[in-house]
Every structure is written in C-alpha cells, then in structure tokens.
Length: 492
Image 1: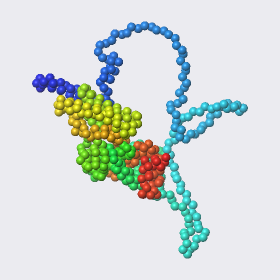
Image 2: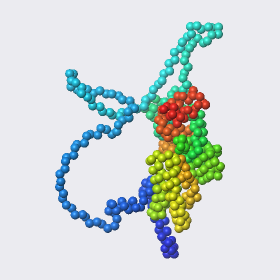
Image 3: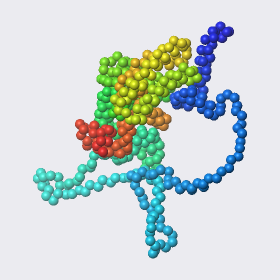
Image 4: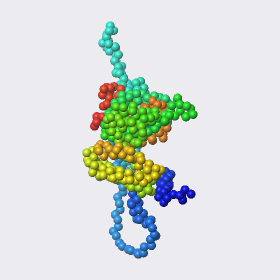
C-alpha cells in the first residue's frame, strides 16, 4: 500500500537505495577489501571486447591455412631464479671428476651457486680475566697486591644474557610477532631451557636500559612541524578487573608519524578518550593530520595548530555507498584523478615545491569543481541515502581536506601512518594481549624504535645489538647519537 502511494521519483530513489544496500551486502560477503575504483566506461569496454553484451554473434567462417617457417632455436637453460646477494659468505666445495685427471690441463670450471641456511645457534662467551700479583707490594699502605681487568659493561649487569640474545628476543616478539612461549619452545629444541619469567624479566630490564633513548626519540617526534596521528587497539591483561570480563582491558596505541623526518612514535594510553592525545600534544605547534574521529576536533581551535584531513577516509565513505549509483561512480572517479596526480609526482620524485605547483595547476581546479557538484547532488538526496552520508561527512571537513593543496610537504591522506600501525594488527593475532599496562608501554617503546628503523631502511638486529652493547657506558647527554636515523649516519 505504501508503494502505491509513492510518486515516481520516490520509487526510483527507493529502488536505487535498495540496489546500493544489496551491493554493499554482497561486497561484505563475497567482495574484495580493496577500495580500487574501476570506471564504468572501462568495464563496458571490457564487456564489449569479451562479447558479453547484447545479441549473440554468428560463428565466423573457417578456412585452412598452411605455411612454412624457420625452426625456432632452442632456448638456453635459465641460469637461475635470481642472482644471490654478493655480500653473503661463500663456502667453496670442490668436486673433482671420478676419473684420474693427472696429466690433464684444466681449461676452465663450472660454477653453480645454491642458497643454504644454518639455523641460529647459541654461543657461550667465556670471559677469562687473568689475575696478577704485584711483586712490589708494600704491606704498610701500598696498592692492592692483585691486578685483574674489570668486566666489560653489559646490558644486564651480572646477567647471563648478552646483547645479541636480548636483541633477537625483542625482534622475534615485536617485529616477527613470535610470542615468548614459542621462542621458549625453539630454545628447548636447541638444548637451552630458559623459564618464561626469566625472559620476561630480561625484556623489562632491557626496556629500562632503552628508556633514556626513547625519551629523546619521543621529544624529537613531538617537535616536528608536521605530524600524522591515528590510534589502534591493544588488549591488556588487567588483574584488577572483574573476573566475569576475563581480566582483559582494551587499551590504545596513539601513533604519531613524521613523514618528513621518517620518525614514528607509539604512545600507550588506557583509553580512547579525547584527553589522551592532549598528554602528548599539549605543547605541539604545526600541521596535524587526522581522520574524522571527534577527539581530534579539540586541536582545531588551538593556536599554532593547523588541522589536515585524510582524503582516504572521505573516499571510503563514497566507496561504502556502492558503485551501482552513477553519482557515486562519478565521485570515485574524481578521487581517482586526484590520486593519479599524487602518483605522478611520486613517480617523478618531484620536490615539495614542484609537487605544490602541479597540485595548484591540476588538482585545485578538480577540487573546486568537485565541491560544486557535491553541493548540487546533496540537494537531490534523501537523508537516508548512503551517498548523503558520504557527502555530509565530507562537506564539514572540506577546508581540512583541501589544505594539502597549499603545501607540497603535506600528504593527501593518512595512509603512511596506517602502514606503521599494520604490524600491530599482526601482533595482536599472535600474542593476543599485553601482560600488563607496563608491558603495553614497553611494547609502544619497541614499536617506536623498530618502526623508525624500518622507515630508514636499517637492519634492526645490527642496530639493536650495537646500541645494547654501547648504552651501559654511553654518555647520557649524547644518547641521541644512538637513535636509528643518527646511528645510520654514523655507520655510513
């Protein structure tokens, strides 16, 4: 009865909304997660080429053709899958023919390289310090009669764990997401039985050693003039919680990324309240790029902070509206053009000034026309239309989303910081939760330092082992020399 009372326009709008809802449901169940948009004209062209449109075609007439051609030369065997790295150590294995070669003259040799692997193994360092007695010892107040070299400083004083072992334990847990109990099983296969409480204590002591380094790293990140911010969850074992809730607390990593200096900071906080990022950003001055989460709105009124939006989040709203509506397809096509300009700038490795000029020339006109189209389309939509939701998300944030056009240093979206968060999601699937709130803070420290290593292309084991050896005796006022980006310059 309600359908009979509707006008033609209302019925058409209802049909479009139902089709979009069906597309969205199908995409959630069967579709891929990618937000890649393929324009309708390309799809139609593909259908034409495959002969899938319209009427069936008559089978073509066939005729027999015969001809002669030269026999193709036999291809040489492939030399191998790919060249092996030249910096790997080589072990030469000489294989002589079985027959007697005495009296023969060698005219060359066949060399074949094959990649092998030796499993990691434990090594015990024995520090032997000879003791010497002084022959000129004066019993009436002279120096001690025995001379012995002092023990070198180690990461854990009087502990049995060396820097290399501590480094691999941290890397396995936080870089390769291998929980401690699996590491312990691997150690047992090598004949070494280390209790889990001992390894947990090693990690805690190692992080205490890294505290001064992390404090300097934190300060350097938060003094950059352009930061991207995002947050992600981490489950934390909280023994004070009600047992009915399984003692698990949902905490948050607030992540701060500097695209220009390639630095990343993970800051653990127990909640997602708007007060949490204020603890880090209370003295911040510069550009701040975020998604649409309301907790970041408070920084928009703060003097010295310029807010930027994330184009990827705005585009996602349109993608979720369903591409069956031609208006949605048009909007996605606009986003595609804007991102194509960014890809061209990246491909040609343009400087910040050059990128700003190409945005001014090509992106800005597209952006201004897009706003007029959105305003016109928005007036035609009903409040419940999914496209209306996407437009109403975008229009209030229009100024923040378009600020990237004014400065070539700024990025179009927050995707760089989401790349830094991705390893945390992998870790959650393996170790499930942090053992305590302090454990979560230690995780944030290691994620920050190792994430910065990755951004600078530094081999993390070499860096971590080296600084763990040096930190016990390194001057505190020069600790910033050991940060990943400074350590890289020192090594070069």
